[in-house]
Amino acid sequence: MPHFEPFSALRYTNAQTDLFALSSPPYDVLSADDRVHFGEQSPWNIVHVDCPLDADGPERYQKAATDIQNWISSKVLTQDPTPSYTLYRMSFRDSTGKDRHTVGVIGALEVVDVGAGGVLPHEQTTPKAKTDRLDLTRATQCNLSPVWGLSLCSGLTQVLLAPGEFMGEMTDKDGVVHRVERVTETDRIDAIRSAIASAPVVIADGHHRYAISRTYRDEMRSANSPLAPAAGLTMTYVAELVEEQLSIAAIHRLVAAVSPSQMEEILSEFYTRVSDNTLSENTLTLMNSEKAICLVRPDGSTTLFTEKTEKFSEVRALDSARLEHAITTALGSLDAAGISYQHGTREVLDALKAGNAQCAVLIRPVSLAEIRRTADEGLLMPPKSTFFTPKLRTGLAMRPLTRG
Image (tube, rainbow, N blue to C red; front, side):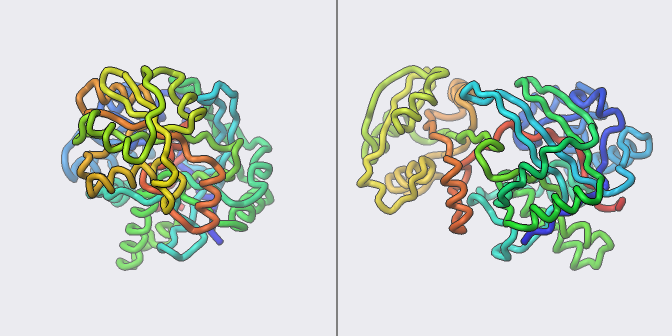
């Protein structure tokens, strides 16, 4: 079962009063404009290190390393004197209008080999040629943003409910309240460690970060580096795999190489046309009620389609898997359709209007029951099946590999 350890976190010294200006969303959801915006909030905003755009090539990573060391020297960042866990609470209103309150814990999760057990993948990953996160880890020798893990331990939420030492709180532009609390008491650290060690952890978000941690671990071991023990773990946020702790959205499909009319033809072979509408706030609700997927055109017009069950007898009951089956059967591959991925219906329509795709297909979120079944049976979701929200902020806690 997985090792999950406390660590001496790096934190912003003024986090309790200025966390909004110092933190940012994770690097992989930031646009270029977002990067500029958050960088303008403060010269010490974490994006200057996590998304170093001020220089090109290898120099950008060295700049990130220099910045973080300067921030430590100048006391912008302060390291915890003793190992701790960080409780991370989020309060928000979900897409159905329900008020939600979640809690997870940030610690250092064991980095295991593929198939070793204890830490399980959640979905297949799409290839990424860039080594950006690996180069950044090599340069900074620090875990800057956490992987997101889901514990199969029953009762973890109860272990995390009691408050810890307040370390900072902020409200983001979407109205999500992010709050962090430090846990240093020995008995409570032992309780959290034992709970998470009692059951596997499923990687929900950050598969590439976890894979890169494996590569970095192997590099440090091969070099007999003093960093090798620290590199055997990576910073991870862990929450219990239960409905009240998760808000799951879909990741929709943008289609660049197929016209709307061609896409209609492809879908009509595998789905039944239900209704024509206009994209609105009610579209996802209508999709859920009709058990449908939705074709979207650049003008905002939509068509709902429901499955022809007999066409998918050997395909998992997931919108993502069945849509992939329809496209690959018709065209031979997803690449032939020019598939890319985008969360959010507003963002999908913006991408279509900008000419980034000819059309799009909206799919429904994966159910919690299916996520649990996938984990229990050792299966993998298709790539980009789930989008866990709200996104964790980067900068609320960081894990140095060289400073204890």
